[in-house]
Image 1 (cartoon, rainbow, N blue to C red):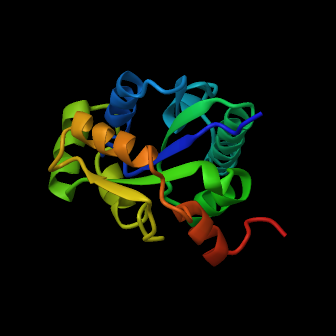
Image 2: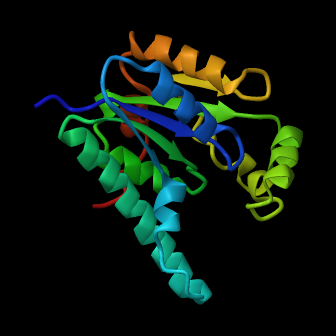
Length: 187
């Protein structure tokens, strides 16, 4: 069985990842793609109040489970569009450990900070300042196969650009280069 393709969108909250993912599902006609968003996994969690330590542990397990769910979907041949925020270094290392590097098209989704702040306020469903807090963290690793600026391009234009690069993916992939550079998350 052939491993499915993984289009991995990484960017801050409100950067436009979900909008790009929706456009990709409309545009891509050479397979069956699934949009897997870390926010969707977070939404499945119990709504009861958790203390700080319990919440941190639950969030870590949620993200680790999310990474493995993406890997499992691809392993059985599904094509996947991943919508994630790699705001902590361990998240990237874990993805590098569990996802097939040669199958991942790693896309940096950028947006100017003032536009992120405007979008965040307009949405009203995110804590104020979340995108600003994540801004310097999510792209710290500095290696992508492709980057899109949603402050300058529409979600559709970004999706079209991703579709075009997906047809002729770079080799070695960004995930391959990062895996060679980053230490393993587990011994």
